[in-house]
Every structure is written in C-alpha cells, then in structure tokens.
Length: 279
Ligand code: BG6
View 1 (cartoon, rainbow, N blue to C red):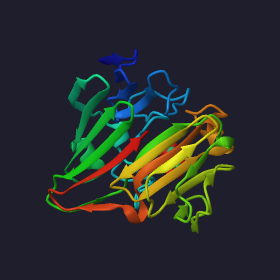
View 2 (cartoon, rainbow, N blue to C red):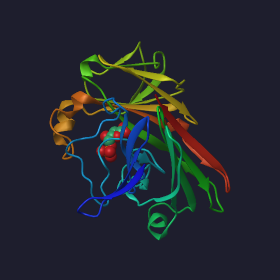
View 3 (cartoon, protein in one colour):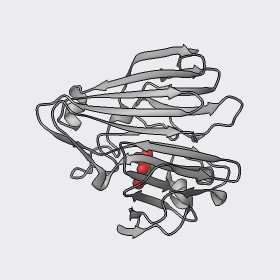
View 4 (cartoon, rainbow, N blue to C red):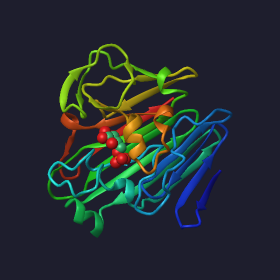
C-alpha cells in the first residue's frame, strides 16, 4: 500500500509497504530515507537529528548527488553534490501489482531554477523497486542540443551495529583518491573504519559486501565503476548540525557513483543509467 504523507511544515513523502518491505520516499530529492524488510531492523541509516525541511537534504537514506558529485569543479558557491537532492520531483508511476515488490518512478526535468545552476536541458528518472531487495536506477537523458558531463552518486547511508565491527569486502587492491589527504592510494585488504574516511575508489568491481557483527549487506552497482566510502568520524560528526555527536558509530556510506575519472559524457538524446541493488 502506498500512502501520501505530509508533515506539519508541509514536507511531503510517500510511505510504501508490501508483504516484503516498507520504504519512505520524500518528494524533495526523490530521497528514499527509510527501507526495512518485513520483521527486520532498517537497512539504511537515518540521522535522528536530520532536517525534514524545504531546501535541506535529509541526512541518511539515499540522497541523489547530481549533476555533480562533491564540490562543483569551478564554482565553490554552487551547492555541494548538485541540486537534484533539493528539488521537488514528481511521482510519475506507481506499480503495486506485485504483493511483494512495489515499483515507483520519479521524474525531474530542467526548469528555470535548474538552468540557473546548470545550463543544460535534461530529464532524470529514478526508478525504485521496494521488495526483498531494494533497487534504485537513476537514468539521465540529455535533452539539450549540446553534450554535457555529469558526475553523480546514489549516496547510500548504511546502518551498522557498531563501526568497530564493520568492514567492506571487495575493494582490496583498488586505487582510491583519499579526499582528506588529496592523494591517490591503493587499498590493502578489506576496508576498516578507525578514523575519518572520505575516499573515491576506482575501477570498482561489484558486488561490495558490508559486514558487521549482526549481518552482511550486498551492494551491487551497474553503470558505475567508482564507489565512495565516507564516515565523518568524531570531530566532523560533532560539527554537523544534523547529526548527533556519536552518530558516526552506527553509519557508513558506500556510494555507487560516477565520480572523478568515471564521470560520464552524454551527447544530445543520449541516456545513462546508474543503478544500485541492495540485498
Ligand atoms: C560524501 C563526500 O559523499 O558526502 C564527503 O565524499 C561529504 O566529502 C559527504 O562530506 C556529506 O556531504 P553533505 O553535503 O551531504 O554534507
């Protein structure tokens, strides 16, 4: 069943529940901020101090970073991670024909406001499948008369039992850009988090596995050969107004991306899809 909900401040979201799972998706950003399989604890992390307000990204779930990942290449005044996560999307399709899997499609098209931030005509479609697995497929279509380049990420915040017990398997031997040191490095073994981490891994081969003391989560990516791993750790977490002081202990971001050398160029009429499948 899909229900349209509205907070007292007008912030709107959809709640979708079927036999296998429940999810909540805000219309702002087509931002999925809750997903749990029936009878299980949530798979995605959501900050208890998150904003649910117009123009502010939700801290948790899967924000969409688009049409640029991270800081804008040339203009630092432009919003970090692009604008898609802060714009209002439209629900264009809801498919509840399967009792165990609900399909939703959201759309965002260029507008006067988007053209002021990024001078291209586009159509974005986000297809979400909520079931025993969670799938998000973000398709970019170039509707302009000129080519454009995008970098992007499905910025997934995973809930972990404790950060000390969590590690990522599948990245050993991969080169990564350490955004904190500003250097390229090579991953030795599995990824353990014992300090602030902000890295873009290259030539990623999916799946990646996230293990903690309670469970293992499989992350499959398509249309992506880069993945971002982020945990703000103690100091940054305390600086962030939408995270409580020890929140870094129960979250870890693994972001299926097209970032750095993996950014994509689309000619007029061309499409590209970036997909994450979480199981
Ligand atoms: C990560 C970036 O993807 O997102 C980090 O690699 C950034 O550098 C983090 O701090 C959170 O970004 P934001 O804009 O949601 O606070």
